[in-house]
Amino acid sequence: MLSPLWQRRLTHKDGARILVTRLVTEYGREHWRSYLLAFVLMAVAAGCTAASAYLIGEVVNSAYVKRDINGIFILGAVTVVLFTAKGIATYGHAVLLSKIGNRIVAENQRRMFAKLLSESLGFFSDRHSSEFIARLSTGAASATAVLNLLITAVGRDLLSLIGLVTVMVIQDPLMSLVGLVIMPPALIFLRKLVRRVKGIAYGQFIGGTRILETLQETLQGIRTVKAFTLEDTMRKRFDESVATVERESNTMARVANRASPLMESLGGIAISLAFVYGGYRIIATNTAPGEFFSFITAFLLAYEPAKRLARFNIDLHSGLVGVRILYELIDAPPSEPSDQGRPPLKLDNARVEFANVRFSYRPGEPVLRDLSFVAQPGQMTALVGPSGGGKSTILSLILRLHETEAGTVLIDGQDIAGVTRDSLRRQIGYVGQDVFLFRGSVRENIAFGKSDATESEIVAAAKAAYAHDFILTFPNGYDTPVGEHGLQLSGGQRQRISVARALIKNAPIILLDEATASLDSESEQQVQGALEHLCHNRTTIAIAHRLHTVAHADRILVVEDGVIVESGRHEELLREGRRYASFYRLQLQSQEARAPVAAAE
View 1: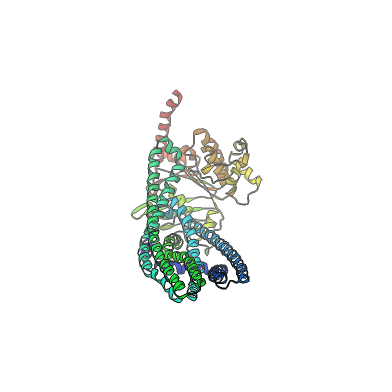
View 2: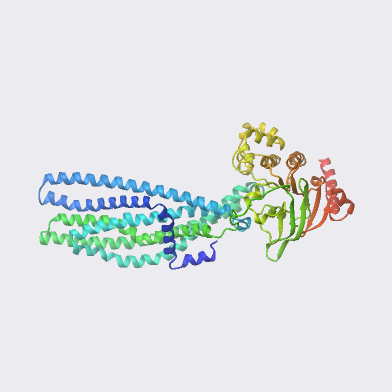
């Protein structure tokens, strides 16, 4: 799933440093004021923690050595102030970091989504959509998690540790050296865990993607799952993915927490030595007990931030896996690069011409071979022929969903490769066989053809598409939800909604890709009437397997193996008796063979 470049970065010894530097440069520079304020508040909290540890010694000495009740009251009041200040500072930096983090997550989600929108169809053809869902959720949040880890490690843990160690040194410099006993073995052990954590974290991401993939496919194909009794198969696939993630998570739990027994043991040794040494000083040398209590308090308070700093490298590399996932997508060169510097398409008659166009999806397997034809303004040009001949590819090239390898596609003499895609696609209305309706109401789906459409325009488009009457039969009329992918509507209803969406766009060029192929005869007749409204006085290029739907076309092109083998009107092609006539006779024979069966039923 990762590119070779990012595979190298994943294992590169300086990979973590490169990523951290980039994160700090990109986001730290933008939000530095908020981070600085959060850092100051953390410093206040750390200072209050250190001061409270120091005050413990003063309280003990005032009570047991000096017997000063007024001093105890004053120290009690100072303690209240310190803990109140610490609470306010902790609240402030927590809220600030959350706000910064939420803003960064939102920024990354926008960046990733915008990046996906800039990609061509070829980019998505060999990837599963669940991968992008996983990248969007994991990658966007990881940058925030790593930045918060960095700021809290320095601002909260390191400053607290520095303050508490300072108290320890002030109270007893010699005993402070005991704390250093635990550092060398802990650092050596933790260093060995980092490499394993990176691989496990990436394995968790892959497993999570597989879970999403199976879930998404099952829900979207639930009819097929039920019809083919695939419940056990999908359940087994899902269970395997879940088991993989569970296994990786258990491994992560073991590896990430493997340092805890060592850290606790070393911490116990250090505290024990401090107890013995401090008790000896009080008993043998009559040292005031306040210093000992203050030292022990500071030592115990310093233990938790010291443990978090010791784990810092493990947590950092775990979070950086998500950052790599984020940057891998964002940094990849767009497969559909921006063309905003090019001039817009300017239409006059909407004449479409293919001039010696060649195209292939895979090297050495040409789909179009020096194909040339003209679709005249205001007329319907029909593309017919066997499946795989290149008909749908022609429409994709007009929309610039793919780019030609050779030759040119011209509209009113302008090479569409030299104009902006946005201006090109705004001039084209498209209706396909597989209608895609978006989540929302009927009204919203029609209005997707024109963002500023008025209510009267929406209704007029629905009437022209023969959709108005069935829309009014719904309980909520135009406000009726269509469901996911429009599954609340029948196939004919979805198709007429898509025609209304194309009608309201009022584009001068219409592309029809098997627009009635999946409909029954009654629905086809209704949609055919809607399509006649849509195509009236517009340059129309239509693909059809049912030849009777394009018998009225101004020109019919027979496309086979990427070239045009015949062209003409319906009657002319029948008289010539070649490929078109052969296709037509085969369809008539198929219809006649089905007719007696239908009558018997």
